[in-house]
Length: 67
Image (cartoon, rainbow, N blue to C red):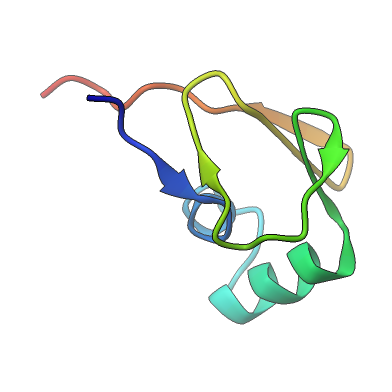
């Protein structure tokens, strides 16, 4: 089963925003792209292989590390 993470959680986890409130505002304002398209859904489920872009930075969503 593939793990997923919500867009707002991913931005915080990657250190691209400082708080959940900042993530929400940036997403709703249209500052964030997923796979090349603006996505205003903070609860958007990301999957392995998705590309998140904010402030000119692109990050590839990787699978969780095996423990």
